[in-house]
Length: 109
Image 1 (cartoon, rainbow, N blue to C red):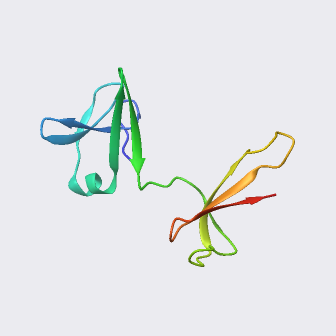
Image 2 (tube, rainbow, N blue to C red; image 1 turned 120 degrees about the vertical axis):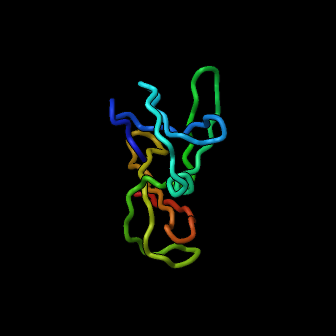
């Protein structure tokens, strides 16, 4: 992920002609994208009116933890997140996703 040197906004990959460049949505600053960065981050853009939504694939921004082991592959490291799935007076649900095979499971408190 790269940031604009002018206003510190996230640079978004956009097509210009036949090339892909990183462009600042605020000030318009553009920077050429190198092939190693292009291969690392893949994105899909969906245009809805004037707004565009960027969906990053193969990028996980979740904390990791040691677990009792994945039910599918037995790997003991997983990403986790907590979500309130039941009434507000009940404890939240913990979700885990195996870092090895991607299997997702949940645990209730």
